[in-house]
Amino acid sequence: MSDSQALKIQFPVPPAPTSAHELRRQQVLEAARSCFARSGFHSASMQQICAEAQMSPGALYRYFPSKDSIIEAIAEEERTLAAACTQLLFVPGDPVERIIQVGLEYLRQTRDRATGGLTIEIWSESIRNTAVGQRFCEIEAAVHTAFRKLLVEARDRGEIDRDTDIDAAMLLIFSLADGLIVHLQLRPEIGIDAIEPHLRKFVEGLLSPKTGHARA
Image (tube, rainbow, N blue to C red):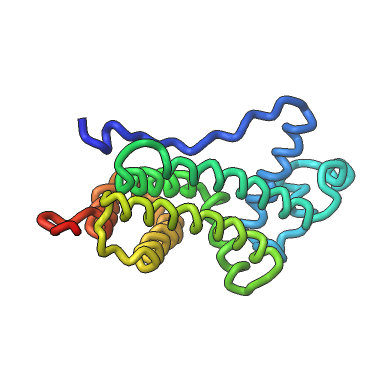
């Protein structure tokens, strides 16, 4: 059995709401995600979120007093998910294969318009260095720190090429993943399975120990 067959990674599924209040709150957040993905954090209005959630303004304000509180709740969800997903990089197995599998699952998770579109909107806010962007930059920084730790430890153990420039490798891997999110939004007919062999070749070529490479 190959490493790719043995190692199958799935992102954690958030727990299902356990009360009517939690269910309606989650519906508001899902509606807000769709509105923010379509119109942006600043242009989307509470009225639009109400319409998307099929809820009156009075009802919505019982769950969230402002748009800022909705954005903060989404950021907290993203932080929790990012922390859980980062841990998948440290499960037992070949680190190169783990990176490939986590990357593929990440792309699958961002295929729908709400998730992928919101990710793109978050990048825009980060580039503009807004308060919203800064909140999400903190989450991204935590992911980068964990990913760098993985690569450094794998290099020290000889599991990736000893001459790997960690910072350059991280830049290339994250740039590829982010670019694919954009293009997969533009080309929804392209399947993840069609991308997998090429993504695998890229990551393995970048990180795998070179054959015949003399070790110190």
